[in-house]
Length: 591
Image (spheres, one colour):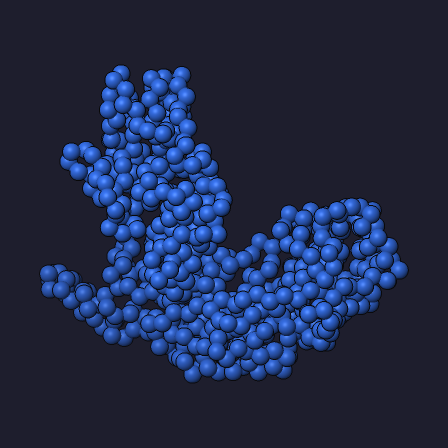
């Protein structure tokens, strides 16, 4: 038989050329497609989650693939009803239904998805970014920031439970337009009507696709592709006109007066009048002969940008709702579908707050205003507050008792992963510094969790697990807030004023300069070694590092930390000094 890459390449080429797909059911007999699907599914944790039967990826063999193919040859394969569970929705008390299929159904759905994805992916509109290879939230947000300049109004759209209300008849009719294989379509129809198990009885599925199914996102994308084509081919030409905005008459008159004074040899009179010129738009923002409309979609959430009056934005919203009701039998969620002005307010899309920037004081090298009209991506303040609440109690950082049973290495690694995940997602935001509050709260919660685990004080945890970062500016660079070191060179003892400000000790260094050395039980006070000195570039040591590094923390108890083994020359960057003095490692928290 042909390899999986060859089969998918042929199907992809037919999809790119718009040719119908025939006799695709026979491709389900190819074991290479199942092995490819197994390699993609087995790496995920959901592969070990059982459905309505105990079957999981555990114990997967070639015999199971052979049995599935044999049942498909005789058209005797039957989909098992999914096990329904519920997940809490963010910011509301409602719950989202989730259907968990059995492992054999997951494997066959992965094969169906690979065939359908190869055929439909070249035909999908570029405005769609959800559940597509090579696309995601960041590609959608970059498109907004780069191509939506000059937007006045945002239309935030959200479909009322989309996955649960997809009409089976409309979806199968869309598939029949290009897939001319009755057996393949019958298999998909049986999948849509397999039902679900909730509290033991089996319930039929009269509409929608099961959330949690492997092929469900692609089927939803194929159904909503009609919405994308309607917007791109109907709404776009109707609300787009003009090549550029006309010049602002007030701006042009004032600019001509200034130029006349300069030509007359009176530049000193022109300078004071230049400031009012910088506060006026150079083009007419309300030009009736200029309209632009932009559209982007991620799964069942979409955003439209419009340059024009609000009345036309209301008309666009009404036409969208009418098309969804008539063509797809879907409804807009009224509480989540709203029209937002781009400058004083902010639209919310994919967790970001999106606004149109306005700053007359920002200029490029030529002295022109270069920021006005561009889109700005921001971290919403409520997102930071919601993330902080997980690590707080009554507004103050708290330890997480559920993690106190893990090792110190696991605790620090888990905090790092959570913080790194938030920062990586919001890395496109222009106010990324807002996450400093989250970092401080998580760090305070981390040291309190470690203190609760080892039954010691927060000061002792800071003293044992502090780090120094190696940065481009040099070793020992200050990270976070700290208190000034007393003139006598001794660290003050006592309780810190808050969870963030704490008297931290300076990094210990060898006489020859900063070295990377591991922790010890107690500072060395031998007569043969001089007293420890401060790093040349800093007087304070940062707190436990929560940045995007791959380092963890020591798994030993703070009171039982190992000493340094001697033997390396003094000043070695990664080893201990030959003098036997226990130095401190300058870097992330390590074993």
